[in-house]
Image (cartoon, rainbow, N blue to C red; front, top):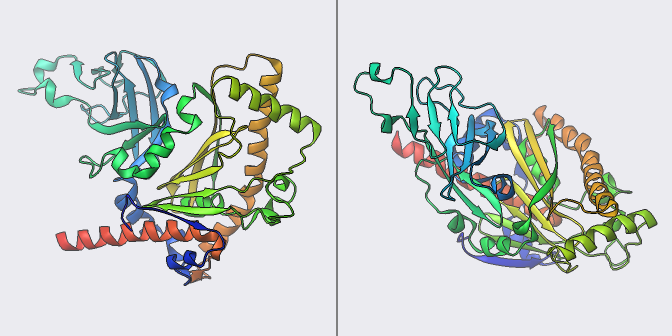
Length: 399
C-alpha cells in the first residue's frame, strides 16, 4: 500500500480480510534476534514522538529523552533564534553524557568530565587547553545532530543520519489530521509513566483493540458499551500507509454516576472555554507508526507512547493535555479525576499484558490468532515485518 494512500473500512466489512486471515508467527513478539532487527530497521530510521512543544515553548529551554531502543539519549533545544535543534547527548571529547538533567532552561551545556562547553546550537564554545589537541578544529567537535520536527504540537526525532523522508512525508495524510487535533493547542499536561514486562507490540496491541473490553474492563469500561454495541467495538477502521485510525463508538446513553458527571462536565466546559473542540463527534483514535496513540474527545485529549526497552520489556508514557493551569477547584477536580480514571483503566491492563508476554516467552506457541476486530494488531505486525524483511534484504545485498 502506498504510504500516502488512505482507506476506511467499516468494522463489519469483509474488506478487513484483505489484511490477511492467517495465523501470525509468535516469535517476533519475544525473540531477541527479531527485536534487534526492529531496532535497526524501524526505531533507528523512522520518526519517533518524544514529547510536546509545550515542554520547550520558550527560547532557551531544553529537554532530554532516553531512547533505550536506540541506546541513545537525545537533547532537544529551543534556541534563541526560535529554532528547535536535536543532538545526541554525548560530549564529542570522550563520549560522556553531556547532561543528566531531563529538562529546564540553559544557554549552554558543560560536560562534567573535562569541562567542554557547548551552545544550544550544538557548537563547541570552549574546551580547557584546547590548543593541546594538535590540529583539531572546534567546528569538527560539534554535537552530533539529530533530525527534529513538529506536527500537531508533537515533537518527533529521526535517528537516521540521512532521513529518507521528512516528518510530513512520513505521516502522509495523518499530518493534516494531527494539525486539527486539540493537542496541537496544549500548553501543559498531566503525565504518568509505567514500565511493563511486555514486548512493545504486545503492549501496544492491547490498546488498539476492543475485543478484550468486556473481559478485562467489565466495570471501568461500562461507558464504552450499550445495547446497540454490547462489546464496544469501533465503528470503522482507517489505514493510512503504516499508520491506522479507528472511530470510537459513542454510547448515546452512558449514564455516568453523579460525581463522574460533575468531574467530566467541569473538564468539558473548561476545555470548550479555552479552545479545545467540544464536538462529541471527534472520536478518531490515531495509531501513529510505530508506537504513538492519540485521542481527542470533549473530556480527554491524550497521547500514549510505548517505548521499547528490550525484546520483552517496555515503557509507556501517558499524557492528558490541557490549556493553561486549572483556575478553579472544580476544574482541578475534573482534571485530576480524568487522569485518575484513565490510569485506573490502564492499571487493569498491566497484569493481562504481562500474562500474555509470559506465555509467549515460554515458546509454547508457534503462532497467534487475530480476529476481524483485531485488524489493527494484524496491520501493525505486517507493517513491522515488511520493514524488517526489507532491511534484511538490504543488508544481504550489501554483504
